[in-house]
Image 1 (tube, each protein chain N blue to C red):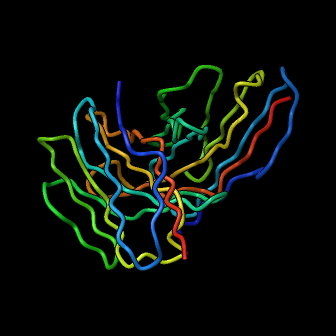
Image 2: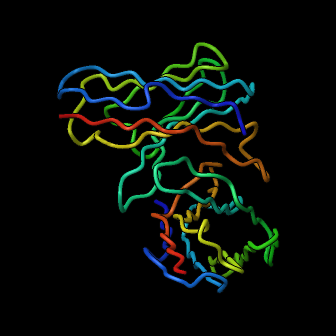
Image 3: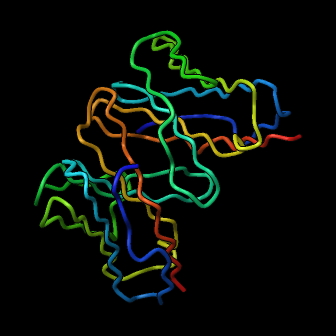
Length: 114
Length: 109
């Protein structure tokens, strides 16, 4: 299994508070991704990174920011959490974004915004 | 935008065969993936198709027709542990993955 962890695994927070989720990998993979998964929507890309300090927006980036200061860590920040951001968040990594190189997913973080 | 459709639910009997269809309309195409996701767990990779035809991996096979925007995942000799959600994902022209909403397969004894 790819070495990828997420922290925290569960979090309950109040509307308006900032929240940071961490993704950590030990595979030295170049690409890292943040997705959210909601019933009826499948996995949707929030932000991704193609190298240290290189990030770009995905399909549902509003309200989220990311940072990658080291190859192994990719942080997702909700500046001011809203109830619509209650979701399960998955981090994924990939060595390359082409060919048969698949994405490996972390265990997920269940976030509840009350 | 991307449009990926797959059935919401399917039920089959242990030992049987189930076929999960996926149709897609995306901006560009650079491969199609199938993932398996058990409840409360992370998705795990099952198969990859980029050329037309059938790819076989043990009890699982995946088929692709690029001209029809169509793929299917075939699960043979179903086992109880195959009860899970199956996700179809297409890598588009920007090399990003777009996922369908997933098909929940329930295997009954």
